[in-house]
Image (cartoon, rainbow, N blue to C red; front, side, top):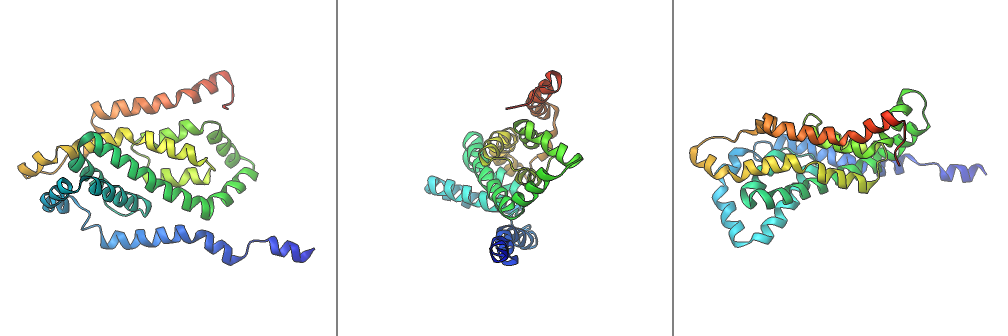
Amino acid sequence: MSDMTQANEPTPKSGLMRRLPLIAIAVVAAIGFFTLRDYLSFDTLRDNREALVAFRDSNYVLTALLFVLAYILIVGFSLPGATIATLTGGFLFGTVFGTIFNVTGATLGATVIFLAARYGFGETLGAKMEASTGPIKKLKDGIDENQWSMLFIMRLVPVVPFFVANLVPSFMQVPLHRFVISTFLGIIPGGLVFSSVGAGLGEVFEAGETPDLGIIFAPHVLLPILGLAALSLLPVLMKAVTGKKGL
């Protein structure tokens, strides 16, 4: 009987194997921070814009595929340059297609982190939180009852770091489909704003200026985004008023 119990217990090796994807992400992120931050920059985009445009004009589909793949790697491994990548998407493909490619790459990259965190720590932490009592259990129950609203708020409110918004749901045992849908839809407003800025980079380059990335905090941009965040809170407020739990 004791042999069977020991056989069912996780070994240190199996625990390490589960954490390998997240460890790999952390290692690549650290290396990328010191080696790539000077290359994934606005200056690099400006200096190579003509070559990028020429390659896009000759190989549009291939350029789009390579761009989405690069965006997945940047987000999936938490490499520097996500903002520059978003601007590049708008610059190369325009506001509409740039937004589509940017949001697709960011969503797939975020899913990589989500799955790595869940595989490494999420299931264990989620089980411990579920079995706990007191404030931690109440926090988890509150999030569980309003998952859609909380997921959209984390994506829509600009002050929530993108990396954090990828990790927290993995620890809260959020279903994969909810994470993907809320990420894709929730980052569209911000992606649209930065893609539109990127689409206008041609004039910025000609004028020898730099883009105004603070535009997302301008009232005419920020207020609609905050309005969407408030709208996503309506189900939470209705539950609080009626005392009904979500499905």
